[in-house]
Amino acid sequence: METIASFTVDHLKLLPGVYVSRKDCTGTDIVTTFDIRMTRPNFEPVMNTAEIHAIEHLGATFLRNHDTMGEKVVYFGPMGCRTGFYLILAGDYESADIVPLLEEMFTFISEYEGEIPGAAPEACGNYLDLNLPMAKYAAKRYLTEALGNITSERLNYQ
Image (cartoon, rainbow, N blue to C red; front, side, top):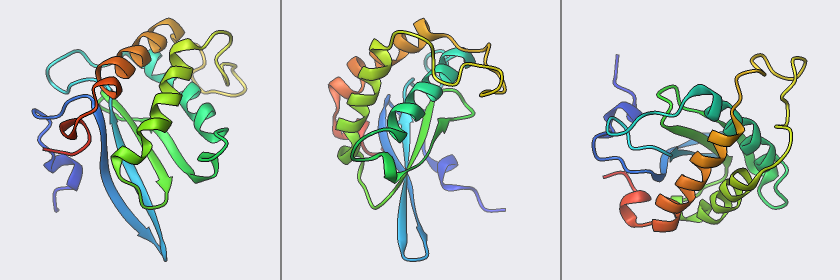
């Protein structure tokens, strides 16, 4: 079997940031998959499932309700390695194009108060595994350390 593209990225060089993971054609349309890397792989602890789960619920809710980008959202969800998320958008984008959207989303998450959307047994298969305080902390950290310090090496795989 061929090695998939994401396994050819040198994870020892990855910094928290936002990267184009891949672009795919579906008929005549392009979809862009973004690697939203929140922690530095293999150098710092990964996020726990409860904060990842809370970010997933809040992020997906924010993105799908976004006034200009909501209709372009195909998917938002966590990476299995627990160092970040994938965002798939309909359209041909570069990493820098979505920095403002991510700033909005992570500000929303870092300031969120109240019940997490979908935090009920009839809406979620693991509704008890949510940690809003840690999700807010992780979102604020990503805003400050990655998006607030955005450089080429945090936008493009090295």
